[in-house]
Length: 297
Image 1: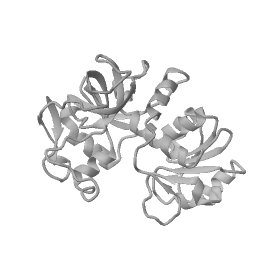
Image 2 (image 1 turned 135 degrees about the vertical axis):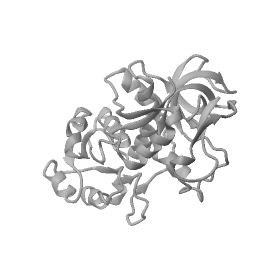
Image 3 (image 1 turned 90 degrees about the vertical axis):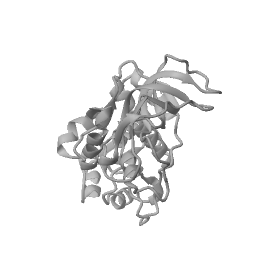
């Protein structure tokens, strides 16, 4: 099969498109014929060597952790999934014609392959984070970075569960954040004052950007125990910090939302698989408003 991999750590130029062995599914896994694969910051952090101390890789290494495609083979112990099913999910080595997924859900009929490929990781991260602050129906949540992939997932999941959401964003994204069901507010210093002008009480805060907003979220909630971050690992604040996936039921949850009232996944840029180097450079430069996706259609 053809895939994109790298044989050494480095900048995006170390990515190489070429032939690799087709993987075989182990117990609990499915193999898919990939239609699209998402590009995430974790991918270029692995490629650069930034993560080598905590997540070393074995060369040659095929990056990618989320994708959408058609089930090609089912591993031992897998139930509810059959060859030929259209799915999206989380796994490994997804920058390839064939990849192994450990957690899958049916591809929503209204999603194209690009949207489906960019759904799983953000949804899992968002649901895991919301559970840590024990957000409940009727409560008010502030999402710092509501227009991003994880932030927009959190907005939609919280709204679906009956919460009121205030989401920070730039002026160009106010309409998008509002369309998700949140009340937009400008991000940046002075956030606490702007939010107080909108509501008398905030129950929880979710930081997805890591640019110093955690302190203001603590000020708004009155306690670090009701604030969670997936972006600030400084340890300066005694808030919930989460990075290890666990909320895999998020896949089925957002698939159901997509079949009902709708669930939005914003795709910013798409690249052919062979142009993964350009996709990484785009992501590292931060010039895509939405998910970056590699396509194999």
